[in-house]
Length: 417
Image 1 (cartoon, rainbow, N blue to C red):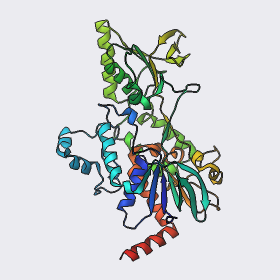
Image 2: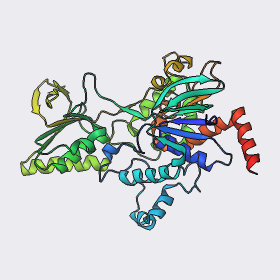
Image 3: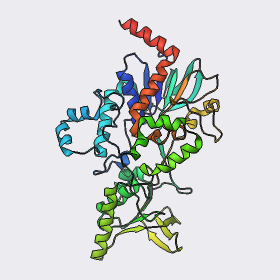
Image 4: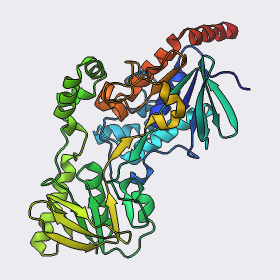
């Protein structure tokens, strides 16, 4: 059997990719492996639209806020790709989403020796001071686990994805199967919904595109300098220490920095299109305010119902796209029976320490760390890129502070000398 790992990462999206880089750069040797069920690295591939940009600065990449001198930075990626000067001349903090995905792939390739792709992780059990689980045909033992199982598509109750019913995460995959498109319905009022509406309106110039949302229109994201402090690493300390009532208020105050909001430029562009079509008398971009979608059938037929007066508009859609967001994957499902050993608060939520470690009973001596699913304890950056570089540094430091890990790492270092 292979030596016991210091840490096993479950899932290999941007969060655990950043952790793998932190392992690679650490002064002490760390036995780490990451297990990903996909055959290769991928991050929201279905929404890598040609002109879609990131909503965070390139400086909030995988490493810079933790280690500004890292060779894994976005700037080092640009230099290697031969675009550093071009990017500087562009005078833009927000790269194309496709470009940032290419950056992720570039970084993932450089740490691929830490990763097992196509590895489905089975039930996790306690073994001595750590854990044991199956990954494919291999049995893995690790003293610490870092769960980064990502986000799951959020669909309204009763809605099931199908040939004509999609979540926006499958947009680019699904659109390849479409030919003659007459009508499209997009549900949602956030950034992904607005991008999807704009995409269909451009891609199919003969199609009528319906945008459906409960509010009056798309609301702008608050990306002002003071509001952006909610994404600062120090804000995690503030949020973690705050009483529950204050946590709820902070999330309410600053929800419009991230949830259900749209970049101002895209809002203005969609408004220009609607107005232009009104002038020309050729409306095919129809935004249904204060409305909801009902009576959705698997063939795409549905009804747009006004919440204000109850009026109903039947639509025979070629495709219905729900841009209704994501929810954190429940780590308890992966942990199986081990989840019963994890403590919960009065609201039934997992208890998490400041260093992102689950609180477990005394029978569990290994550490279980979460990357994502900690919004109730650590705030809005729980599953966002904004604090990823700092978070992985804190998790790795916590793991290496554990007595067994430190002792073994030091002995390995002495052996190398």
